[in-house]
Every structure is written in C-alpha cells, then in structure tokens.
Image (spheres, rainbow, N blue to C red):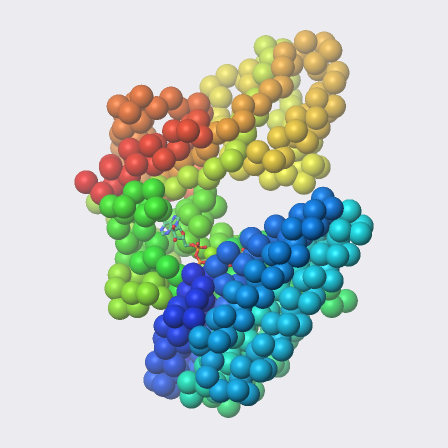
Length: 469
Ligand code: ADP
Ligand code: ASP
Ligand code: MG
C-alpha cells in the first residue's frame, strides 16, 4: 500500500493567495511522488477571531457584525480573484463564499435578536472560516492539475455535544472517515478537509476548541492509520521557545511525545495539546514543518525514551498567560482530611480545569492556578463549599491573585541531572524575578513556576538563555 500522508495547513499557511499557492505546491509535490494525500485546512489567519468578534458583538446588540461580514466577504473574494483563474472554479467558490457569509449574517442577526450567543451558535459561526477556506484550496488544487475534492469534516468527525470543546467518538469517526476518504484516495483524489469542526449524531456543528485543526489532522491520521501527519505552520518546527519572545530560539530536531505534551499543555501554541495522544496510540509519525521554509529545519515527534539525552536536560521553555493563583489558607486546616478533595471537587463543578497545583511544605495552604476568566466562579464556589470551615476559623481566607503566568521548562533529560531547579531559580533571581509558586510536573520532565504577568517574557528569556548557551 502506498504511503498515506495527512498534510495540515494552519491559518498563516492559507492566509493569502500567495500562501495558498505555496501550500498547494507542497501538496502537489507530495502527490506527484505517488503518496496518498489528505489535506486539512484551518481558516485564513485572523478569520476565526473576526467571526467570534461578530457573534459577541451581536449578542451585545451591537451591529458591528455587519461591517465584519463585509470585511470577511472582501477578504475571501479578493483571494479568489487573485488565486483562481478559470471562470468555472471562480464562480463555484464565490457562490460558496456568498452562501457562508449569508449564513454568518443570518446567525448574527439571530444572536442579536436573542441577545445571547449560545455555545452552539458560537460553533455554527466560528466554523465558517474553515468551511470557506476548504473550497478555495480545493478549487486551486484542481486548477493546478491535482484532482481534489472539498470534504466537510461534519461528515467525518462525530463528536459529543460539548460545543466549543467537543470530543470525538473515535469508532464512529473511523467508520465515517474510511467510508468517505478511502474511495477518494484510491482514485488519487486529494480530499481537502475542514479542520476544527465536527458534528453530533443529530448533525449539529461542533468545534474542537481553538487551535483544533491540529487535533482534526491527528484524529484523521489515527483513524485512517496514516503513515505520517505533517503540521505545516509558520515556524521551523517546535523551537526552544516561542521565537516571537526570543529571536534566538532554535529548532528542536526531535521532541518526545511526553515533552511535546507538556509544552503544548503549558502554552506552546505550535501544536494543540490534544493532537498528541491519537498519534501515540496509532504509531504514525508526527512532523511539524514550516510551509515557507519546507526544506529547512523541522521537528519530528519521537517515542518517549528516544531522542533526548541528559546532555541537553533542558529543551524548551514556554508560558501560559492569563492565569490566577488561588490560595486556601488557615492554620486550622492542619491535619483536617479531605480539604483538597473538596476544594478540587468544588472547582470541577464550575467546569474549570485547574492548570497547576503547587506543593506546600506544610498543610496550611493549598495553592493552584485557574484561567483568569474562571476566577470569580471558582472563588464563589470555594466560599460556599467551605462556609462551615470559614465560620469556625479553620480556614482563614480564600483569595486569588490575578495577572499571573505559568512559565514551564521542559526536557525529559532533566530527571537524571542534579541541580536543574537551582540553575533555573538562579537565572530568574539574577533578573530580580520573584517566583510566586513552584511545581514539578508529575512526569519529571517539566518544572513550572508562577510569576507576575509583567515578568512573563523576561522569565522566558532568562530561562531560555540556559538552553541556548
Ligand atoms: P497555525 O496557524 O499554523 O496553527 P499557530 O499560530 O497556531 O500556527 O502556531 C504557530 C505559532 O506558535 C508560531 O508562530 C509561534 O509564534 C508559536 N509558538 C509558541 N511556542 C512555540 C515553540 N516552542 N516553537 C515554535 N513555535 C511556537
Ligand atoms: N481556525 C481555528 C482557530 O483559529 C482552528 C485552527 O486554526 O486550528 O482556532
Ligand atoms: Mg494552531
């Protein structure tokens, strides 16, 4: 059987007619080798943000969405004009753009009338960018001599009804993908699939969460038993840190599954955290490559226990922004059983996931971080859970510090090398950066520190200097 490659192009890689031309060139080159290729596309860069902005403005009764509809129409229509050459493809794709922008207007109007954007409405709206982009890419591939067909991932990815963070039903998804994609692939036709989107059994559109097109590619790669999934993006693979923060960041040629999981979870946007597991389970190769530098450095994700050594104990540093540090403290907590379980139970019931838990040397406080937008809900839930303890002064106070970030340094070699935390703390101390809390990842391949938001970039750079020198 010939090789099957899933090629996923992110927002910048399909962000203009020139970018789409470059991306399509990579697809054609792979296809010409005889590889069976399936393409997954994101929305053009910035489009998902504009769609969501429209939905939110409509829910506040603001008519700004009408201007956004015009902007979105022009952006896509202009791309078609400069990219597509045949009247047939042009009119086909323009018709799709008209339809989907019409849908955007109708949905925003409904949201405005209701005065509320439900998670379900937000998914119907935020999915439109991928639904338009897929037609542009498929049209251009066909015109440039590569058989291609637009495939809506609503027909491939079956999910639950957790709108905005839907989770796939892998068994049904496998059946749907194989039934739809295998005949196309056998026919040497490239399916061009919308990333980010799925649908419930009842046919409601869902999304997998922001940045979810990576997850789409991994899901399809896994259920189709692809030989490789290539995440084509706008940087040279996974780097030692976000190159926007430290321009001296360098590409990591190999990163283990465990390392990339930690990096993705702690904010390295280059890969969606959920995209890792399907690839581990299925065993195909996962690459991160630069669309605009296709022969340049790239990253291959490798099995745990390979590709890392204690010679390079620290590999990468990342930061997750917009967090709050919540503390429950009181001398009366000492030795009282079950406080932590009740605290995390109360947080979970608010639908919030805890990003980090820190260890205290005594039992007089429990400290953890949550995403800032959830802070108020979490504090209210904790106050009500511990009303009794607060009135008996067993708990003195429950408080939050907003405006913090979690800075994480990752490297599976660090568990075997002594003194790593000391080096990290010294690097921050030299920059007069105050560490508010510390946690060591359970996998022993990461250390996370909480610092004030305004010290985020400096902290990343200070730790990064330990890696690159
Ligand atoms: P795409 O639209 O292709 O999915 P994203 O913007 O989601 O791309 O992710 C790529 C971006 O991730 C890069 O432009 C870079 O700024 C950022 N990034 C953050 N951390 C890292 C890292 N460690 N290595 C590479 N890129 C990173
Ligand atoms: N377009 C979606 C987003 O911006 C999904 C993605 O690009 O991966 O979040
Ligand atoms: Mg992304």
